[in-house]
Length: 623
Image (cartoon, rainbow, N blue to C red):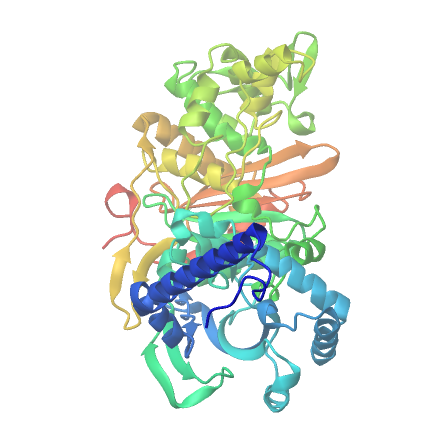
């Protein structure tokens, strides 16, 4: 119907028309965006989101593999596994509200006989090591706690009890420093190549052979996938996929348990810090290696933070976690004289028949260097000088080699002050003092004087700034005994599968070969044999009646302000040794007082079970 102009409403303003157009345009854009988004969700990414939706209906559980066992050379179990129920909490599943979270932690603290503060501290410290892993609050929980948590699951979200494998040590602290310990892989370790494929919460070796041979012992974790409903509870379909874990392989060590027990017992009986090594002089296989004080590795089995470890073993003097056999840093006293003799002979400084007068002291630059106890032995050649351990004889050798570097060169070739190559972590390189070393320190203002003849005189008798340990001394003696082969010491013997089949054998090649003149070797060993088993020898009182011929050297090292340190290194049987034993006991006094009797106990254990008949080719046992 047509309206007159006076009957029409007011005309639409330009502003209103613009607004309507804008709103309309926005609406169209929103519809287009919504359409595109729906297309992306349903068409372009439909398969991806369908898969994720299906994944929301399943839960995956990583199943840890049991680690392989650790055995001695005869197959006796040193480390095995046991199962344990562990109370764990996943911090990501705790209530987000602070009040509810604190209330649950308080209930957990009560269940674990702890305090909320300690629980929170434990979670904080463990999460720093493994941010995405469940925190283990307690292992070996009882059945009553399992049933209680199952009945009250709604009060403890994020809390569950898992069956886990835990290391078991049938012989307690036996060979503790050798076997080492295990623990959860840290965040930093996960970045290392050797731990590729692991996840937070997985267990790895932390020390000892557990660390060195971790890739064999670790095994491969399994995977279990189950179907759950909207509330996360398993459905009637239950388990969907099960990939069982593959247990780790067994590791057999070269350790002879009788020798190991004898060495540990000898150190413990004296109650003083110390260490020992017994090694095959031809292969480098370690038959025994120990340190005192020791520790029970089972103490390290429960989850522990580094602060707890430090608190448990905080005494720097006793330091039970320190393996003094490979990480100790000591002067050696007169056991170093074998090295001095070899350097002097091979450098042409003396021959086995060169006479040197021992008048009781040697004065250099106005400073007297005297024999221990003020003794005076007159004119000596090498063999009797070793027998009575004449300091003046070896002071003279040190003086004659003080600016040639021959003493340091031979000590270094024999393994002093350099890596040994042993398959245990934490072995110290030590310090072999030299003219270049001290003069550099002097130039840098780190010491008050340059190198002098007195420094070399001290080194010739294993004193001064020398820092070494029983393992390095055992290597040096073995090198002379076997004719010049610097062996690679090792405790790993072989890897076996669960059926006992050998998968891999360890026989590391020698480090190097040095020239050892057979005449010089024979003279040195004769002197050490007389020192041990001829009347007047420094350890005749200990080894004089031992039925097996041996060649051994005492050492009494000065370590101010501590009392003298006792040393003994022995090769047996003489003249073609199969084994070397090196023992040191801090504050043990003269070498014949503490270290030599301890070495005797070790040799008694070895020869009680090994033939003492004629040596075979190259000094090995027959057959």
